[in-house]
Length: 198
Image (cartoon, rainbow, N blue to C red; front, side, top):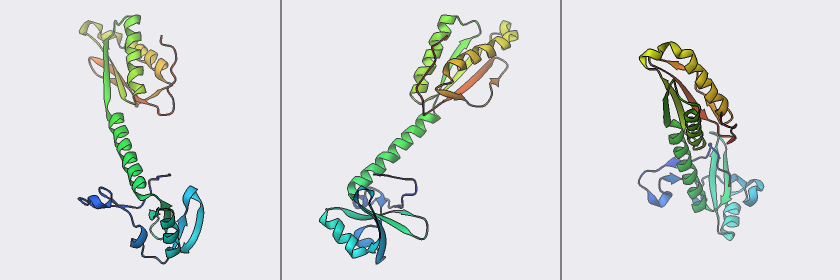
């Protein structure tokens, strides 16, 4: 069942009899005498008499539901109303969950003299977070006596990104502060591939 972002509904707070907050124009609530209808299996029925559509749906123990609107014309579909509401709520919940995830950021900190082995561990930690669709910020910290090694810090961050660029993208340029350089990465949704580390 296709659920798009133009789905026509209104929120009715506190009315559990209308889908736990969702209400759609359906069945006897439909005011038009002639309606454009999509049947089961997405069959295009075109403009038909409302009563004919209702009788057809009742025989199948289904409902006629207004699913979209462009402000002028409405589109109705023959479907199982309770299942439709369930799928919409599930989609909304998943969308909120993904949004919350993508807004979280995990920080991975290390100093300029990090060993190759420890850097490999940090990169693998970044891969773990990115595959969970979490943003990651790598932070190179400089002690006072190493402030002149900022170019080395940039090289380390570039090396990290070369291992993660198949599953992430940079959020702008590197951020510089007096005691650290940082690089923020956003996970890519389309790929879980990674290059070998180091």
